[in-house]
Image (cartoon, rainbow, N blue to C red):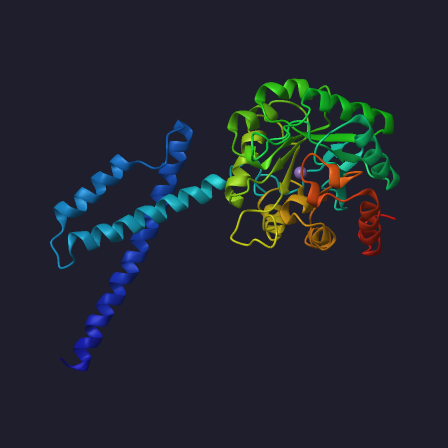
Length: 358
Ligand SMILES: [Mn+2]
């Protein structure tokens, strides 16, 4: 075959490629319009029956030289790309999305403005054990000019035989101590039916890692006017985490603080793997403030300070850690809670790091 005819054939291919490109994008525009119509109708974007019909049409009309399987594979890729096109469109409409609201959400809790650009701290024991225990930690928190006190009353534990928390009694202790010292209480609620009761005792409703996809609980927390601290599930992707927050905001409550608390990986040197890069990703994708729980992500006292520095440096709005007057006797997470002198050192080191208001 002469060079000239080869060039002629190649220019035919070039023209067809341009035509294909134009046709694919024309198809894409129609797909976008279909997406809009489906959204108005509230119908599902993915339609397997329609896709089957299209694949059958390819089979019935294929005259070669490509095999039907090859062509069906190529068309499957086109269908997949079309769905992706609609997905990007769909994400624009998420209420937690930065595209929906470009400015930061600031969650105000008794004067503390989480998301105002300064680091905030949520400190306190893993579990509420007694009034005296909570009071001692609360005084140390107050001593550092901090406002937010955490403490677990409902404790979802890995083993059903481990300490399950004091329940409502624990919430009452937290509330009493917080009132005495003008602190705000952050505590976990594990059952949708307890959300209403929690309003009497809590300034922030925490939804724990194990409940991140408890959709009834998310909806219940979303239907009240109280800030929610939502922890990332231990095996949840960032996308799943964002959708969990969307469950809350979709019910009307936009006072949400996202909390990275480490994810499960093969690494055993730490209790979980602190996914530090999730912080800027979450802040980029959503308008919500982001906290980092340095206790449960690392599970190691010697890593609390470097992890807290990293969290603040990468843009976290709050750091959460556990403090207990006598960690050795704690009913849960004994190994990883700071005692009060360690907590004082932790705060002093962060002040020296020059990120915490003096
Ligand atoms: Mn704990």
